[in-house]
Image 1: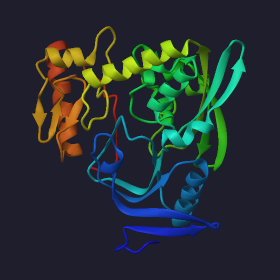
Image 2 (image 1 turned 90 degrees about the vertical axis):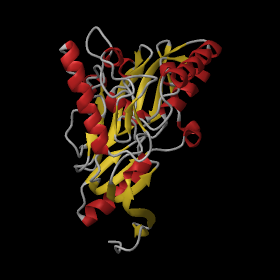
Image 3 (image 1 turned 60 degrees about the vertical axis):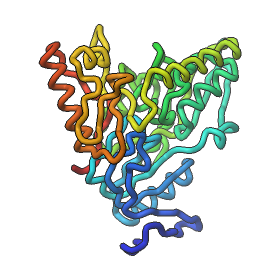
Amino acid sequence: MPARSEREVVVRLAGRELRVRRHEPLSRYTTFRIGGPADYLVRAGDRPALELALEWAEREGLPVTVIGGGSNLLVRDGGIRGLVVVFRAAGEALDGSLELVPDDGATVVTLLATAPLSWAGHRTSELGLAGLEWAAGLPGVVGGAVVNNAGAHGGEIGSVLVDVELYDLVERRVVRWTRADVAPRYRMTELKAQPRPRRYVVLSARLRLVPGDAASLLRTATENARWRREHQPTGPCAGSVFTNPPGTYAGYLIEQAGLKGLQIGRMKVSERHANFFVNLGGATAAEALALLDAVQRRVSEHFGILLQPEIEVIGEP
C-alpha cells in the first residue's frame, strides 16, 4: 500500500508495473470538471491493464469503480472510496483494433470499449459504414455509450448493437451479452440499471452497420459535429442533464419555464441549450445538484412534468 505522502507510486505485480495515484481529484476525469478525490486511481487503456488494476484492488481489499470518458457523470464532492479505474484510450491508438466482418450485405464492426465515441463515428463514416455518423462530436467512449444507450440526431447505439463482451468483476471472467440481454431503451440498459459499484465492465461491442457512400456519410458526420459546436455549450458540462419526456423536449420545457441562465454558485443553465448545465469554473457537485433540483421543481410547477435526470450521480456527499 502506498504511503500517505506519495501521490503516485509504481506497484509491481505479476512482473508488470501499475501506476497508482492516491487522493486523485476526479474533476480531472469528468467532462463536468467536478468531483471529489478517489482514494486510489489507475488509468487503463486496455484489458490487460484493467485486469492488473483489478488484481491489485483484490489484493488490497478495495472496492472498484470503473468510469470511461467521464461524460454523463456527476461525481459528488466527497469523491469515491476504493479504487477508480479510468478505462479509456486515444482513438489514434485504436485505429488498428477495428474488426470488420461481412454479414449478409452489412458489416459487423467490433469496437473496443475504450474507443472515443466521436472517433468511432468519424472512422466508420470514412469506411463507408452507416449507423454511427450521429456520434461524431459527442464526448465519451464506446463502453459508456453502450451502457447509457447513447444517441443523437435520431440515432442511438442500441439500434445497431449486436452484442457486447463484458468483464465480470466478481467471477473475474469474460462473458458475452446479446442485444436482448442488454435491453437498450431510451437512454437506459440493463447494464446501467446495475447498482454501483457495477459488476460488469464493457470490453468491446459488436455493431451491425450497413454500406453507405463514404463521402456522404463523412459530410453528415462533420455536419453533426458542427451542429453540436454551434448549438450546445462547449465549456465544462456533462451533456443532456435530463431525458426528454414523451412528446416533448426537456430543453424546451426548461426554456419555457424561464430558466435559461439560472445560476446557483458556479453552476449555470446554459443560455445556448437549456438542457445543459455549465461549470463556470470551480463549481461543486452540491451546486450542480441544487441547480438540478431547482430546475426540476420549477418545470414541475409550470407544466406538471417531473424531469428525470439523464446524468448519473455517483460518489460520497
